[in-house]
Length: 455
Ligand code: PFF
Image 1 (cartoon, rainbow, N blue to C red):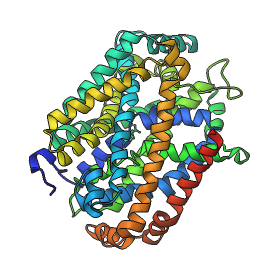
Image 2 (tube, rainbow, N blue to C red):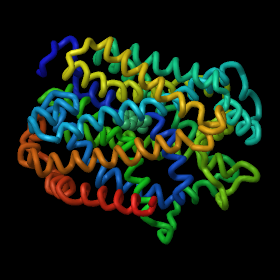
Image 3 (tube, rainbow, N blue to C red):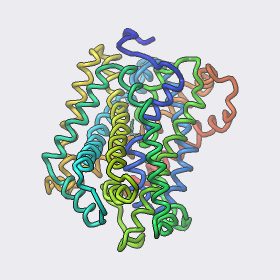
Image 4 (cartoon, rainbow, N blue to C red):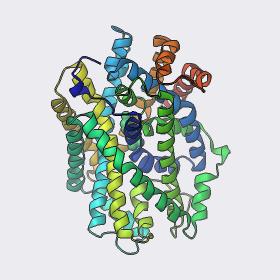
């Protein structure tokens, strides 16, 4: 295994531990905070439809590709490309992934910080009793624009993440994900049921689930594919890094399938909570509604206040949301850290602290761009960071990962790796077709189209 000691690198205890940890990376603010915004700004149900297609046809394909490359090489993204094709420009794709990770971590941690702030607000009783849209909207706008509070929250999130990563893979990540994910899932289901039984839930349900196919366009496809990569932690080598810790006895295909399924299920349920609640609110309807960056934070207090035992429920929910966000920030920090440990022989602790500090600094403009500092707000720094790194760079990365696997390393080598731990690969012909043609072609076409529109 690699060039570092077993202790510095670590490995998963079992297949199920891997699935929990990889789902921990995938499930997070991407499904619960970002997905509803994407649905809300891209035509509702038609986006949901495009998203499901994107996950099945492209997300799963790239997920399996990353896990396969990762397990084969037992390395971080830069090391992985380097060990399959030494002394070629391919390792640039790895470097790009490492850099993308640092940037995503920076603004993602701002939103995770909001979740922390909301936990505090819920504990101190800000959302006690009946919560109106006006109150909820005001609380969010006020909080996101408070520079001191958001920066303190950002600092705490990055600090916690750095602490977990510096302690190593097994003790750190595994312990967090195993216990708490199922509990979060139970709370999400309860909220979804409550939302569906609200008076006036119908408007939200049809907005969310009745697609208008006439609305389909390149923009929607671009954001659907980008959201699939973001939500499944693909395109920057996270799943490659996680795959490098999987045992040769484990089944990569079913692991990839489980991670895609559980992540999408949580995203789907998040939409079931948000839209019926939103459009059951007096005065708010789909016509002319524009989803903003705080959508989840505006809507959750409304539904939590309508569930029996709302106070305890709310506290527990934001606590678990925070854990879900942390298992994702942990995976974001793991990629650059594994790179420095494996390739540059840094000590794990030093690497984690260095990257943590860097992301904190990079996160400051995003943190202040939601009302905190007016010129950063006007520039829309956080939205732009998310567009560039969360959509475009992940898509570019995923494109190169497909091309690398299919045309440089070779599908037959990948299939040999997949066969270890999995004798019957039922969807093999489909996966081979997708990785060679469909996924790279679809991603590059959409990217070119979008760049064309943006100019
Ligand atoms: N997938 C995470 C989420 O949906 O919250 C975010 C993320 C983690 C994106 C790791 C990319 C990544 F490499």
